[in-house]
Length: 108
Image 1 (cartoon, one colour):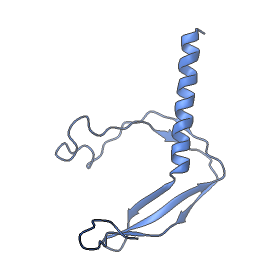
Image 2: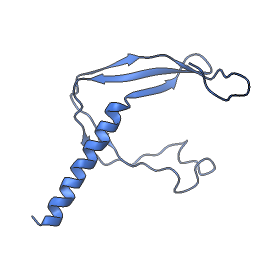
Image 3: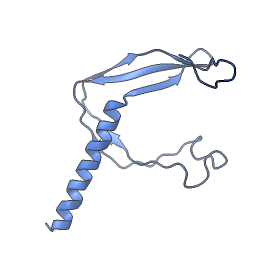
C-alpha cells in the first residue's frame, strides 16, 4: 500500500465519520402533517450511530426540476446506510406556517 493510498483511505474514513456526526447532531426532521400548513417534527434517537457509505443514484421530482433548481445547484453529496441500529423515532413540536404580519418568521 502506498502512502497516497493510505492517506486517501484515512481521508475517506474521516469524511464518513464527519457525515455520521453531522446526522447524529442534526437527527431532527419535519414531514407533512395531516393538518394543512403544519409539519410534524420527528427525531431519530439512538445510543450508537454506526453507518457505512453506500453508492446511490437518486431521482427526485422536486430536485430534478430545473425550473426550481438550475443544473449544478442541487446534488447528492453522500449516502449512508445504518443497519441493525437500536433506535426509535420521537416526536417534537410541530412547525406551523403561521406568520405574524411583516416579520416573515415561521412560528412554532
